[in-house]
Length: 51
Image 1 (cartoon, rainbow, N blue to C red):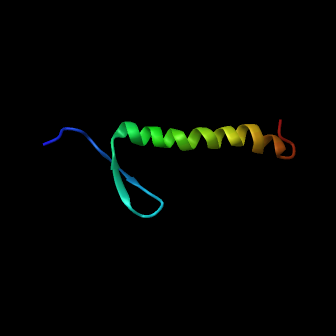
Image 2 (image 1 turned 120 degrees about the vertical axis):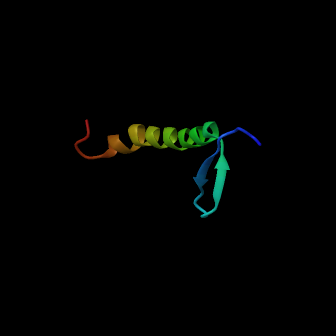
């Protein structure tokens, strides 16, 4: 029996996938970093009254 721990990840399609915790962490970072960079560099300076 394998001793690798897996994390259940829910995809937007509703299917459940199993990944290692390292892959799940990398997937989260791949989504969070571009979104936060966009918000910081593009969206928030365009808000009225933003410093």
